[in-house]
Image 1 (cartoon, rainbow, N blue to C red):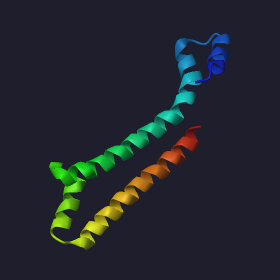
Image 2 (image 1 turned 30 degrees about the vertical axis):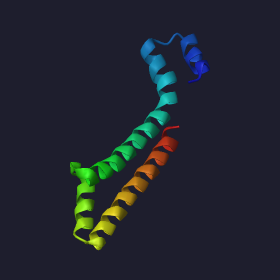
Image 3 (image 1 turned 90 degrees about the vertical axis):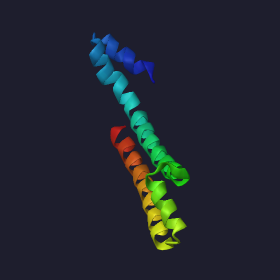
Length: 100
């Protein structure tokens, strides 16, 4: 975080809320949005792995398809997981560019 922006806002006599809104928030929002989408991506991937070992969710559906030798369904589930992860990555990059 750049101290110069905070000092510039302080020198105008801004209140604490104005300092937060105009100096601090614009600096942290791109990182906050990027980390939020990154964490969402990690949670989605972990849910698939945890489901394979027996906790349910997306991974359980994938595991069931593999156990039943339904490789077309398993392939479709894997493609869906990959597409969702790629969509999250694209959305994260787009939002980070839009915010900064």
